[in-house]
Amino acid sequence: MGFDFESELKKLPAKPGVYIMHGEGDEIIYVGKAVSLKNRVRQYFRPGQDGRIKIEKMMPHVTRFEYIVTDSELEALVLENNLIKEHSPRYNTMLKDGKTYPFIRVTLEDDYPRLLFSRQMKKNKSKYYGPFTSAAAVKDTINLLQKLYHIRNCNRTIDETKPTKPCLYYQMKMCDMPCNNGITKGEYRKNVDKAINFLEGDYKGVVSGLTDKMNAAAEDMNFEDAAIYRDLIESVKHVIEKQKINNSDFEDRDIVGIAVEDNDAVIQIFFIRNGRMMGREHVYMSIAEGDGEDEIMESFLTQYYGGTPYLPHEIMTEIRPSNAEEIEEWLTKRRGKKLSIVVPKIGKKEKLVNLAKTNATMLLKQNKEQIKREEARTKGAMRELSELLKLPPLSRVEAFDISNISGFLSVGSMVVFEDGKPRKNDYRKFRLKTVTGPDDYASMYEVLTRRFTHGMAEAEELEDKDYGSFTRFPDVIFMDGGKGQVNIAERVMAELNLTIPIAGMVKDDNHRTRGIYYKGKEMPIDTASEGFKLLTRIQDEAHRFAIEYHRMLRSKNQVHSILDDIPNVGAKRRNALMKAFESIEELRAASVEDILKVPGFNRLSAQSVFDYMHMM
Image 1 (cartoon, rainbow, N blue to C red):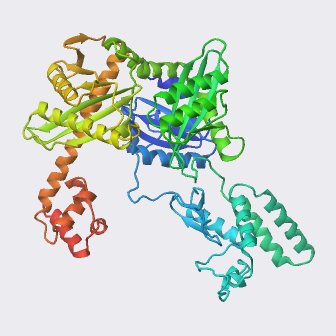
Image 2 (image 1 turned 120 degrees about the horizontal axis):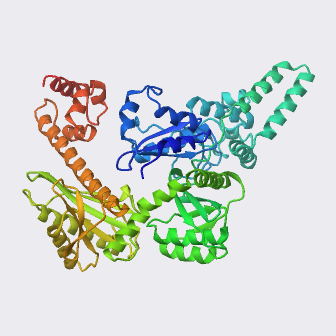
Image 3 (image 1 turned 60 degrees about the vertical axis):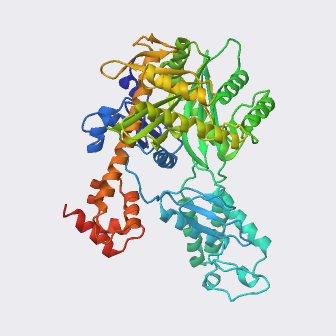
């Protein structure tokens, strides 16, 4: 049963959030934000309402959509930015200069901290606030806090034993002269703490205090000072709203929200990685009779984190199960480092848990049947394959493919599916080193040997912990072919003394999966089953990934051969151009200014490249 667009459009909430469009391979092809999800997403499915050419081209490829509700438009904006950077959707415009939303940095590593404008959150002793929607908002806020709390604006190295002459900011009453012992380090830190409290949303007292000062100045007929206080009050009121999607502590954590209705539950997990919210996942659970939220959370934590390959530093949830200490001890042992299960009570972290719960509740109420279908096409499909092959429950599968043109630039691909979903961070590309000519069997032998030899070496370095990129081995390997490919894989397993089951995806005359070759015989599979559909998706993804890599290498090779003949372009500049431009078409479309941005180029060499490309 396909995705019911009409039904799902009716369920959209009139709330701010981010919407995510998926393509034929269930990959993310577009991410957008909305003040009202209900109004914005519906426009995509009404011809002519959006009006953008790229949307007209995209919509025929959309197979489903999903969304994440946020508390504000700003949170939606920041989350959209994070997801675009993480997934690089095909139909989103991508920034190439790495520009991002600005932050306010408090340099707590300094004896006399400053407030600075920053485009990035870095892992240091500073505290970061934001992101803000505009650079002007950051500068206005910094200026306001300097006026309110007299935070210094200079970059002087302050030494109490060597006083220096005060600057203009002291004359303007925006600095208390720490450079000339005008304020002690302790008093200055108190002012910094007040600025931090303000940045964390505690500004009611500020407004009240400024209002009292404004009224007192007006009563004394000091209208100039009263006007200054009035302007400060307006500045405070216009400081932009806080958001919760980014954290400045850079810890990896999962945010878990739970929603329960009758015998069904949905668990929503937000993934915070390196301080940024990078994605989410939801899990449907069927509740045993008599189980409460404590038992549900215990079952989720043990089942979900017992199988996931990556464990964060912290799991935040609204419910700490009664045996949380035992679960923490077990997961800490799995992770190799301390893992904590915490229930935040106040502040940003509590709001994140509430946001996860809100999304879980919405999913449960509006999408119960869809969640069950999604469960069937992913984990259910994996169960079907494990039953067909008579294997223990499958979590991770890997598939391999070879791509070349008459043996030219042979490459291999490895794709990974976990719980029925592609795990793209674990995909790998291989450029063949030992094989010349169109020998798929020899190529596959090299790819498999390199993959598992590397994994075994990496596991040994990590003392057999499964946290490296190659160390987690699959529950089963699917080969793109029948008996011949399976025999090659079994040979590699025997030589490396590994016991991973091998199955072949047998193709028909149209190169589509028709069955599975396993343990010396071909096994038929119901082509209407979810297991068969998953197998087809795995095969298609292995093909796509190999072909895209091969196409990219061909483009690079073409660029390389043409660049050999350009005047004023030597080996270093040629390599720099190949890194900057993936195809000859992209290079031809570049301006002289674009080429000047490539490392190592001056105007003469950039003009040479431009002239040569436009003579062709």
